[in-house]
Length: 248
Image (cartoon, rainbow, N blue to C red; front, top):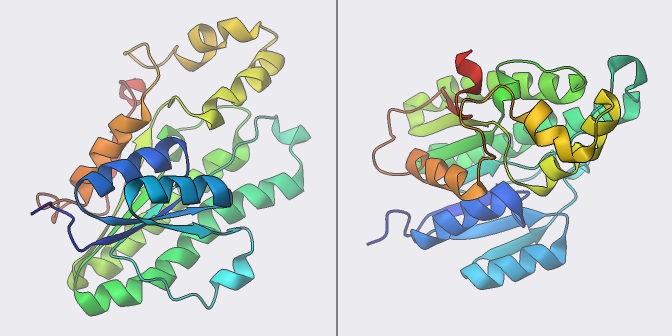
C-alpha cells in the first residue's frame, strides 16, 4: 500500500512551481491532492492529471476563510508573492497584501484544518518558508517579516498539535527555479544596476556553497518525508534546503 493512501492533502499555490511538485510527490504515494489556486484552469488541469480535486480560491478574501471548515489530513501552506524594493519605496498596500497571503492565510487555513486533524488523531502541516524565514536580505522587508512570522506560527502549531498526533514544520528553501524567482531577476538587476544576465551569479548564488538553483522536485521529496511514516517525531522544526547558504 502506498504510504499516503487514504490521506487528503490540500496544497495552496498548488497549480505550479513548488506546490505542483509537492502535489505530484504526494499523489504518487496515494494521497488525494486538492490543488488550491487562484488560477482555476491550471488547478483543474493538474488535479485531473493527478486524479485529485481543484479548489479555485482567492486566498486574499480572508473573510471567506474565517468560517471555513477544511477537510484535510495534510495542509501545505505554499502560496506566496514577492516585492523587491527598499523600505522607503515599499507601498504599504503591497506590504499588507504580502502579510495577508503569507501569514494570515496560513493561520486561517491551519485554524480551519486542525479540528478535523485533532478529531482523527493525525495531521501534518507543512509551511513553505524560506531561508528568509531565518535570515534577512535587503529590499525584501515584507517577505522576510512574513516568513519570520510564519516560522513562529508553525512552532506554536507544533506545540498545540503535539498531544493530538498533529505535526507542523517549515521547509526553508534557498533560490528555487520557479516563476516567482524568475520574476525577481529584473527587479534585482534594476536595484543593483547590473544586467539581468548577471543576477544569478552576482546576486542570487553568491551565498550558497552549491552554485545552482534548487529544483521544485527536491522540495517535493523533503515534503514527502515530513508527511511519511518516519517523521512522526519531526515537529516544530525548520528544514533548510539552501545549498549551504545559512551555514555562513
